[in-house]
Length: 405
Ligand SMILES: Nc1nc2c(c(=O)[nH]1)N[C@H]1C(S)=C(S)[C@@H](COP(=O)(O)O)O[C@H]1N2
Ligand SMILES: [Mo]
Image (tube, rainbow, N blue to C red; front, top):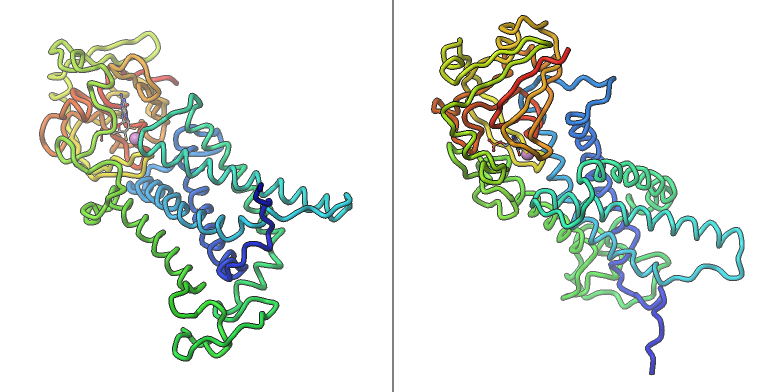
């Protein structure tokens, strides 16, 4: 006998209720909004539109925004799973037949929910994959994650607008009251109800049965635990409990390493005693050895490395301000400076310092970390460290600086 296709009415759990869906949805919406805003900021930091000037401070801005981005995405995973569970029986409801205006509206709404769910799942899956350096697909992570972010936030807005009447009714409605329309159920045993509304014959507070309140508590606890478990990668005292923190926080000189010198293929060229920095401006070029750089006035600054993956670490860097090198070339102070590394390929082998960074006294060509020569994993012999910028732009193993304009 072939089992019959389920119908929406077959799913009878009183936990599936607009009150649960709307409360989880509220937090999910907040998480997506935080991830969207911080994500756009991060994208603009790397792919800066003409009208946007990325700030040079506060120095921890990217540490905070990108930490929030990853934490909001992490919290959204359990929230999304519970929200989908609370509504998935609707998948089995049938469109009205024969075709009518009503059926058409419902079909369009379902299509929009399809886009919403697909884009939300895509964002959370690819975001999580990015933090684990796992790219099973060929597409560019950043541009795709950015494009789909607009689809996700747009379909969330449409969804909230469509569901607003239900949300406004369900959000303030007490959790413990039976679902509408009031089902005729046996009153629960005395003492088993919880909260102020236990008088109202709660339909989900029988002993041993998970209540709506219990489900919500478990959901928030799961989201909170996921956040705690991921937060350790940015908040050092949480590192001990940070089972989801992808980077352990360990690395040479107490700073984690994203891409190693071995992976970048720069071990020999970086250790070569004949290493020189090439400075260029128009037809002027200049070569400086490590000793030449060390002979210039040095500046020491505490600036964090803040990775797009959400982890960050504070560190103290010593080196030559890039502005001094620009001045040494006789180039104008407010210039774009193109940075090249010994790495021959890869998206992070070059970066451009816009004028507000190339002229900022705290933008360093760093030679030291915590008062010692840079470890090769941190960019020996020289790396860029600029305040407030995304980690991907803090180019390691620098070999050339070219003043562009
Ligand atoms: N040449 C080069 N520089 C690079 C990278 C790289 O892959 N190649 N990775 C960047 C990224 S993604 C980060 S987060 C920082 C990490 O610096 P750290 O390894 O010293 O912590 O270096 C940046 N500089
Ligand atoms: Mo990074």
